[in-house]
Amino acid sequence: MRRGLFALTLSTVIVSGCGTNTPSASPVSGSSETPQSQASADGGTNSPSSGGTVRVAMATEPDNLDPYLSAATDTGSMMDNVFDGLFEAGENNELVPAIAESYQVSEDGLTYTFALRQGVTFHDGSALTSEDVYYSYAKLAGLNGQEPLSSKFSGIGSIETPDDYTVTVKLKERDAAFLSANIIAIVPKDYEKQSEHPVGAGPFKFVEYTPGQQLALEKNEQFYDPERAPKLDRVEFKIMPDVNSSILALQSGDIDMVPGVSAQGALQLGESFTLVSGPQNMVQLMALNNSVKPLDDAKVRQAINYAIDKDVIIETVAEGNGTKLGSNMSPAMKMYYQEGLEDRYSFNAEQAKQLLREAGYENGFDLTITVPSNYQFHVDTAQVIAEQLKQVGIRAEIKQIEWSSWLEDVYNNAKYEATIVGLTGKLDPHEVLGRYETTYPKNFFKFSNDEFDRLVNEGRTELDETKRAALYKEAQTVLTEQAAAVFIMDPSRTVAMKSNLHGFKTYPVQKYDFAEMYYAE
Image (cartoon, rainbow, N blue to C red):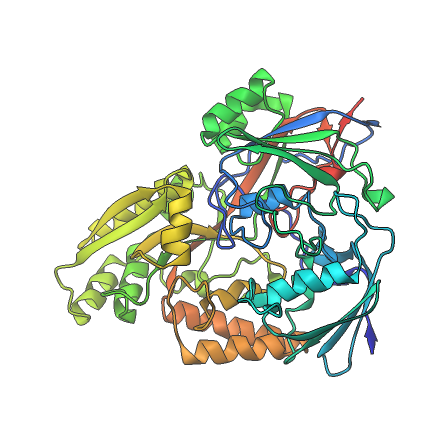
């Protein structure tokens, strides 16, 4: 058996960043910029004080309070404070212990044995044992007779609980991405009202959710880990779709933290507030539905890529604060990132027109770009793209819909032609690129390529990191050459806070850890 040593590094890169005021769904997140200065929110020499409430401006409504049914990244970043998993995502792309104290992996890579921390209780007062882990993972893997709720767990063959604090998971085949999946929430056995009143074992307890107004959490006084015990009494997520209103509310003292502000907003705030900036490890793209005409033709998709000037989008929409991309991987995933693809489709209107002629669309065609209306960053991007496509004869119409409708129509049912959205960063490369695998249930791109499928499936079972990285780099090249989508940028993001609020940390995934935050005396 190989023993797991905490923390387990999943990648060699240290990433700073945290999503922005853009969409969020296991697909999603995204916005822009770096202000005039970068600030650390570690509190410096200020003495932390216990208590207080943090009011946070959130652009979106929660899509579902049940952690297994939610698809929205913003929802996950709020509710992550309510739930804990066997592991937590660390600042440096590593796994850190949470409910699991240690783990072992068999030599064949098929059996994982987790030793659980004793003395953990859920918010309803019940003790967390191996039976709760079994119940949680059985739901996720479909071992309860229902459809699997997560493809990350569908490879589980069986789960054993030899005692109250030991869980043994046996996989059907080797899965190098499985360990990082264990940051998912553990929920209490047989509790079926998570969508109405969530119950977890995290540092904060759910209090209430009033649609259109706020989601409120309060300190979990019985939290199992003294080192991670929260100092704040309460966190209130205020639903504020308009970022300008959020900035004004921060200035007036009605809000304490805004997770995504523009460069203009940062300048407006001045030096009276703490600003933390960094890349997001996310991918803003224009997804193309590869199953509808004429987007089922690779030449048409390549023409669209040549027609779009990403540099202009970055300069105008992101105010220069974004990293140009060429495939669905941010350079934040340093070990797995394939360099050079960002210039594969340098802007070339004549090349775009030539490809359209070869595909039989010399006179262009009509294209509908569906955009979630509450994410101005993506709406603005769509407007720039529509103007650029017009130059090569593609007549783009922008269709704005509510976020909930986007999740249902586009993400769940692929009823669209093109859409602008951001795909959030993950800890493991398979979680990033596996979205394009033919049989992936949420492959809303409808991309299907045998070579790509072979590469990502080999990558999933390859335990040698160097060989694994080579497979995912090659898979990125296939995505780019086939023009599965228009990969635009990894936007930077700025979080603004009151100057006496400290402890904010950045992660390679969108995560707001309020257990680390406090007001200075």
